[in-house]
Amino acid sequence: MRIALLTYSTRPRGGVVHTLALAEALCAAGAEVTVWSLARGGGFFRPIAAGVRVELVPFPDVPGEQVGGRIMRSIALLRDAFRPGDYDIVHAQDCISANAVPRCVRTVHHLDRFTTPELAACHERAITRPYAHVTVSAAVAAELRDGWGITATVIPNGVDADRFAAAPRMVRARPYLLSVGGIEPRKGSIDLLDAFAIVRRTRPDLELVIAGGETLFDYREYRAAWQARADALGLAPDVLGPVAHDELPSLVAGAAAFAFPSTKEGFGLAALEALAAGVPVVVRDLPVLREVFGPAVGYGHDPESLAAALLAAVERGHRPSALPSTYTWTEAARRHLAFYATLA
Image (tube, rainbow, N blue to C red):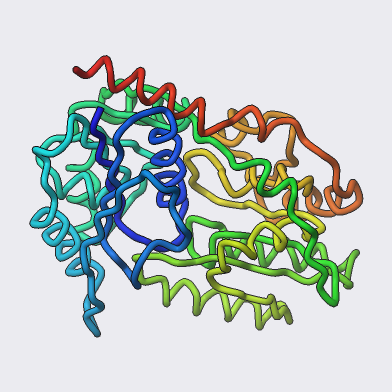
């Protein structure tokens, strides 16, 4: 079976991580897999297993380009380069790639609300045009069914649990709470500041570390509001930005607790990686995260309850969790291949 997996970026975001891991597992299962992507900033953020073919479409930066224009240029460049006739299955992993190809399967990782006209139209077409749909959780499948009358096949993510379980713990000058995903509205970054300010009243020795944040969107206004809130609270979190692939597991493993206060998620892969490292995790109380994590994590719905759960997590300390090992990329690939077979 010749499969094309399409993603919008070579940089580390959840959907890109999913695409590469799934491609490698499908290849290991005997499929012929090609990953197509816009080359934002060069090649992929990590090496890819031998056997997976890669097609990168150059995507140079355009100074001053607005988000809407960048989206439309992304779609056009990928559309012009892609060769659909080379594949039995064309599987788009995001809004941009689903708009760039004429006929595809689509994985809907999560659903968004956009005010930029180009983004709103892109989002709608990427849901309604594909002829088959996959979601990584039942909660997102229910959103598709209720909002669009679309029935999706649920295939959860895998987790590279061994990579995080084996990582040595990073040692920093002070114990730290860690959040991965950068500073943006969907990640609940301002709520995290407010929660951390409460935590510091009891544990002034803790620092807040924020990693990641590579994104296509312009969050400068939100980040300015975040910085103003941090200043008002007298906080100075250590904002690392994107962390090298080989360094991330140790950073995660060294955390006193992992904070995941996202307001919208499709699965919660970063939080599962933290659990694999034995780190206690606190997430926002969302149906999708209840579905994936059950009792394995702490929950909060606002800064006060998030702070209480984080303090309890720090006191509880590191302990192994069996949950991450129940989600494997081998199983995800097997289920994808069975799904693809039904489309023939």
